[in-house]
Image (cartoon, rainbow, N blue to C red; front, side):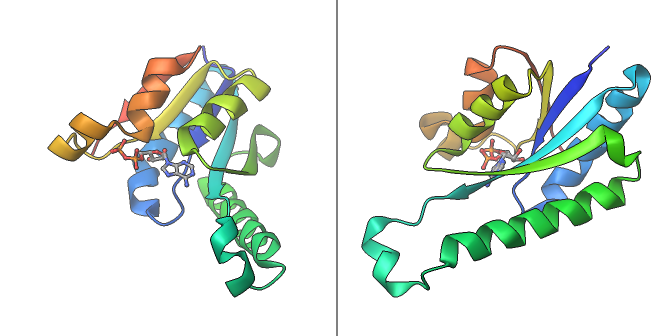
Length: 142
Ligand code: ADP
């Protein structure tokens, strides 16, 4: 049913991502669909630029690409059905929504912590994606 599934991953919390990845894999199998793993890196604030190595952003991107490649391999589906992307931006949910449009995703599968008062008031990445995505969104909770 779902042909193009986007799975945004916070690489600092891969335990949170595991159930979302497993769900995406299972849903993609029923329709031989594709999965795109996405990690979003924050832009280095201009104020910090002089304190970090010149190639800091390049190194960060490379580490994220390597980590996503490992996750993609561990998923165990055919390599032609899984790909990964690293984006850089100041807003994680904005980059998730942009990537969803770029790959014409018909489903975004993402994990979310349980709602807390903090996110109730401030909103969250998952909350913004649910609100603004043009495709279906499945929020997987532990
Ligand atoms: P919650 O929605 O529970 O408040 P968050 O908004 O921080 O929690 O994150 C939930 C989800 O947002 C993660 O499971 C992941 O799908 C996505 N996410 C968070 N950080 C990133 C990131 N740096 N890159 C890609 N996706 C992310």
